[in-house]
Length: 274
Image 1 (tube, rainbow, N blue to C red):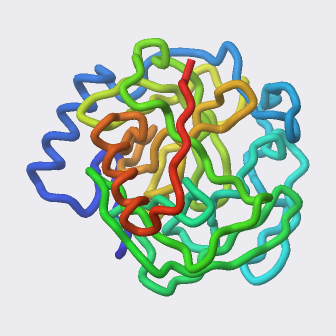
Image 2 (tube, rainbow, N blue to C red; image 1 turned 120 degrees about the horizontal axis):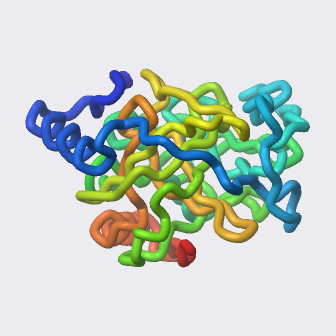
């Protein structure tokens, strides 16, 4: 499908859905750019390392040199501390691992059957799989099945524990990815109707912010819990971004059902977001 993301509207959905989501976002955020500044944020600085802060105006690129058909070189900046080995960037219709054999995508912008799905591990080593099955979830969620599981050096991401209190997550920094293989720092603006909405970081001392645009749909955002990246959402709307919240009970249950239907040998993992 063609991505038609036009900030701040959702893509490829009915007019009624557009009106409902716009009203929900306005209720959650008041505007879509509330004030705030990052108190602490960062990745792991390396496997098992302590959290680190992106330095001022640090380049956001994940790769120094990206190649879909061979091994790639990883950037050496702050993004090196973020394990993106479970995100497939060889197509703007991004796919993200939730088990060694299952990926999530945006339903309105998912890859077709037999499409190649390329991952690079933290050292840039390439592997390729292909999509052989699909099962739709709640909202803008599509779960895909790979022809083979990935090895242990490629990261399936846990989801937030379903039904946990989200009030403590408001204004938390999140790592937001885009189609150009960049990482940005936004903040959580609010939750509602199975969706999480973000706002821009107005004090942009750490990391960069971005208005998400056409082609960014389906790219993942992550909450940092300890030294682990937890998959928060995949983009549906533009501007600061919003999409299905994977900790929402209905959304997560639909993902569980899809995983079970496609290959019941695997289970998603969850982490309590604190």
